[in-house]
Image (tube, rainbow, N blue to C red):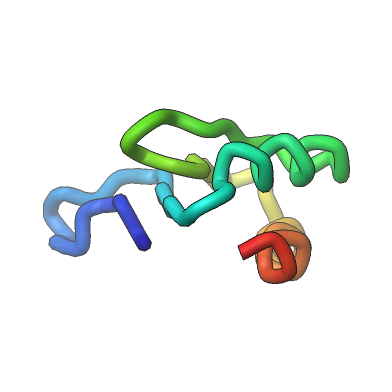
Length: 68
């Protein structure tokens, strides 16, 4: 479940996704060197910045997929 606002005017620079086992997935992703955090009622919080590259986001999604 995407917890970030869907309305364009309410969105910001972070994306929150939640699913059963999200807290454990966050710990596993951090072991892989992916920087993010877990927040109750939010799930995994990812905040890409201008210094991230597309390959960083692709690596995150590739690592996340088997954990969901």
